[in-house]
Structures are given as C-alpha cells and as structure tokens.
Image (cartoon, rainbow, N blue to C red):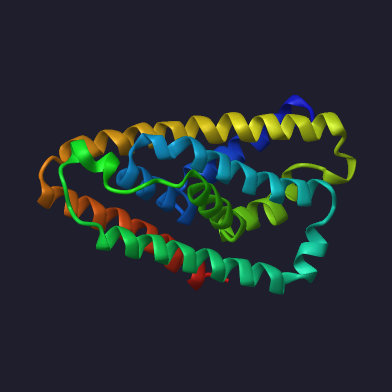
Length: 205
C-alpha cells in the first residue's frame, strides 16, 4: 500500500470503530459492570475477530466465506445468545457499593475474550467492512506480505487507541455510582447495553 492507500484504510477503519454498534455496546457494558480491568482482554478479543475477517479478505477467501454463509448465521445466533446470558446475569446481580463491586463475582478473562471475539465475528458492521468496503479501498489482488503486515499494525493501533478512550470514559462514569441503589441501576444499564448488542446482532442480516 502507498501512503494514500494507508491513509484511506486508516480513516475508513477508524470511522467503523468509532461508530456505535453491538461490539462497542458490549465493550462499554462490560466495563461498566466490571471496571477498566475488563478492557484489555475484550480489546484483544475484538482484535482477534478483526484479524480473522481481515485475513479472509486479504487472502481472497471472501467468496468462500459467502459460500458458507450458514456457518456465519450459526455464529451470529451463538454470539447473540451468549450476550443475552451475560445480560441476564448482570440483571440478577445483587446491588452493592462500588468499592466492593470488584468482588461481587469472578470475572473470567476467557469468557470476556470469547464473547468479544464472537461479537466481532458476527457483527454485520465488521463483516461489511472487511468483505465489501475493504476490497473497494485496497487492491487485495496485489496485496503483498508487507502490505498485510501494515494492515495488521494499523488495525491494532487504531482499535486499541479508540477502545482505550471509550474504556477510560466508561470507567470514569462508574465513579458516579456509590450507593447500592445506584449500583443496581448500573448493573441494569450494563445488562441492557449488552442485551441491546445481542438484539442488534440477531435482528440484522
């Protein structure tokens, strides 16, 4: 990729990451529920999902992915179901003070990683970008290994930078919640955000 291609790729991808969607809703919801410690592993899960789609597009497997569309439908529903389960658990969590919020239950890094990965793999926004938009802005037919590596780096830098800003903002918002009643509201806001992500994934084709 030349400098023009790098700039177009970076701008297009940044707009996709910044724009609201099920992945961002799930990311923010988990931070509201568990704190900023939930951010890094979630970001890695989203990055892993992006790498899957980016690699599919870069290696010319977009057509193959479309051929096996049924597999991605199943992934979509599994991702939506898992997010609904997480939302249900947040709604059922007993409210307590924010200072004790970190101890209200174990936070499984593996579960956070898997949920973020599945959300990304089943996110229509990611699918459309990598399988439709990306081929229009990058000549994938002549994508060299160096170009592929540049794409990996751009995705990592842009994704982690933007998610970092969202993580800090979401974590700061938790500081307003000090009473058990407020924590109950926080849990339900978090659960609603995650459930909303699940509904969006399930509803869109």
